[in-house]
Length: 363
Image (cartoon, rainbow, N blue to C red; front, side):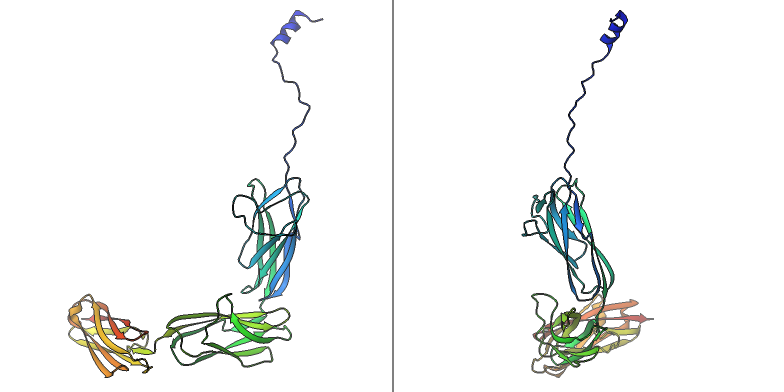
């Protein structure tokens, strides 16, 4: 029996929605698992090319859209074999994923590591990035301990300034740790598609022992300017295939300029000039290749107070030897002076040469 008071309460109470018996389904979520979870190459020799296979399986209940695989340095590279066994790119070209790894599917990622130039304990990583920013990337560590098996001394053979023609020789030494039998079989460029200069020659002087000498020679005509070659010493060994070093030089024309400045041959140093005197310095020019004449044409003077400087030229032997005098008058009034002379000549490699000069006026 409903009393008047209970009826009033029921009429004033708000109407509540009826409970829903059906539950909403949870979103499907992919979950990538790598086997092994970290690539451990262990103890290796510098110069070895390493390769290990990583199996990546989707253990979740949703598809994983793969956008890219990135490595933390250029020494580490990755390649993909999809569930169908086909090779896939490691980065998408547009907005579409490279592939979608469905639940239960597995792909192979081949991880390569180049130990060239590496030493000690090296840690890198490989990351699988999803196309969906709401999903978590998968990181796989890469670990290797690198020991130098072959030491090249010097690793950077700097020949400094060398003439355009003539033979220049130096020795590099290749020394091995306990690696067993090994041989030097040849020399090539470290850079694929770039050959070594034809004027660069090598001769192996020792064929036994842990320490092998290699004669490096530059012979024949070479272009004027900076010369650089990255050389791979090809090695016959069960694990090590090469050792690297670099050769650099500045190839100069066969024309020498002697400024009398022992500290810096390309500059004239007047040092201290008295205010009441005139001082002359001489640049001696010698062409070391008479077959290619050097004929001096003009000498131009560049200086802020040009009236206090002068030049004279003497021909010692036409096409071979000249002398250029630069004279400064200490009355110029400035405590410090500088300028340049520009030598212009008829010569295929050296049509012009600028030589700076400087000095102080002592009152």
